[in-house]
Length: 199
Length: 199
DNA sequence: AACATAAAGTTCTCATAAAGTTCTCACTAA
DNA sequence: TTAGTGAGAACTTTATGAGAACTTTATGTT
Image (spheres, rainbow over the protein chains, first blue to last red):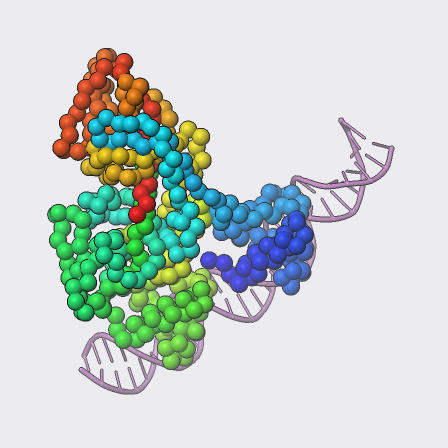
């Protein structure tokens, strides 16, 4: 989290770069945020760097502050080289299917959660997997939801509205059983729209 | 269980964060619940923290109160592809866990395949999933390999070297059985290092 | 290319206001 | 009596600013 002044510095740098096509000097940054010490300006910049908001090259003059824009606009498409059969024999026919991940990675409403536990294992969500969640609070049938219980516990379950006052949380694991909750106790944080596993 | 005042403090913090995008100061919290002592506000916040409803960083100004509604799952950032997480009630352990995808998406040796069939379903790989494959041709124990059979069929299996001349391809599906192949007939295309599912 | 010099970046100490923390005392209601 | 609540003083730490002293870069001259 940035402090107010750090934010001021950050915004100044962005604007300066847009306007001049190059990065400001330290004393320009200082003046830009209404102080006189370039040492202080430098301290803010170091802080922004440790917050991974900008990058810079040590001792390099001017252009030395470089915004790390990579993380905001990288297009993510992965070409599929073909379908693979995880079953019997296969057709190694190349397919033009494209793994479209833009939505998942660029949507502001999305965040990722690391799954702990195996209540959804039969839905193919294992312990340690990452799920991509899109914020929303409606009950959608046959969607996996991220549910907050009693403002304390978060869990991943199928959710079903039983009646006006009760919902049922359904795990995808035969060893576990469904649970009924008063709607007042639960709050839907989002639904799972993607999943990533790193071996 | 929270007391009435604790609940009031909690709700104020949530609303403040939603409205201002940052956490309130202690004196703002105090004013928000109709008292004048920031010491008391602090006491409530400590209480909320011990109830695991929020978290905070000691002595840090403002943004220092951070909601922690997550226990079983953690919010994260996806390195190289922008912040996920952020905002809302799920900003718990920021930066603590990072979903590192650079390797998967930037490595020249990697490609993606779409899975057809369910021979690996017990390993959590479902029909329709994408697997990220890293090219390599060695037999690695307990790794899922992409195997080309008779220069025709590609399949996803665990692979085990039986002896000099034979390997065994082992599916992760009780309904299917392992198959033995002459090493001359198979060629390892790569191993699965990641997996993506889009709902 | 080597050198000299100015200018930019870096590091540091000192200082102060404001925010967070801890504490004691006090009141009220179950 | 005890738990919940409130006020506020005293203390600790952070956020911020100034500026001196140092290191490195940029650039012009020889």
